[in-house]
Image 1 (tube, helix red, strand yellow):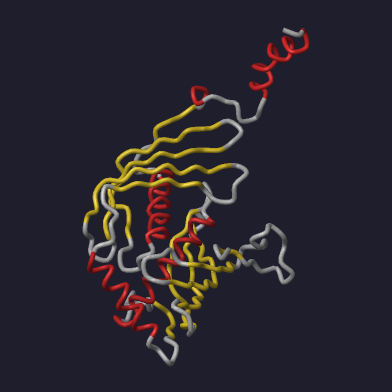
Image 2 (spheres, one colour):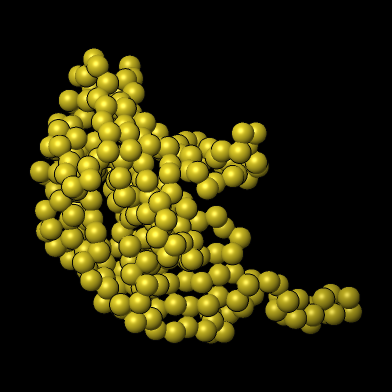
Length: 265
């Protein structure tokens, strides 16, 4: 073997060790998190929120019932990886869907967490699927746009005919929540300030929402404008603009100081 090649091969392991992502899993430190801790609840909530977005059904929105186990791993120079086990249920019917596991990876150089979640049963139930399609057909038949304000009202009441519109806002905001959440800030949809249907000539339905997200731990309301485009069986397409954002989807400041973010590609 040539001397130069031998020297190169001898030095190769050291060079690999010097790479920033060369830390082996054995070097990752980890700790268990009490299941009633905010970190554990946030990780489970974010996982089920992401699952709702991916499912594409406004009539089968899931929520966390109980966190069973939570672990946090510190990955050197990359970020923090959460592992959670929890039970979940359908928020509309309180039907138990069983046991779920998820990993939520907050990476230092990434704008939103990477999520992998699996539940023992996530199949959209026939009644929810029928309700999705009936709502879709009704909206496609509209000649005058559906509108609404203050949903729910100050007493927590939602008019029955606007419940599917509320559910679709929950589905659309699930993308926004996933996109905005960091380890230090979590969000829930709180109230629709106003909503107006956008009539379309294609096979999609669309709504423009002005709504509030509730942010923890500050307990402040974040005002967002969200444009949701949807068809049954598919995740929604979402554009959003929240009052605290100052960058657009390309990472550049927008001219008027507002943000234009979303999953329209």
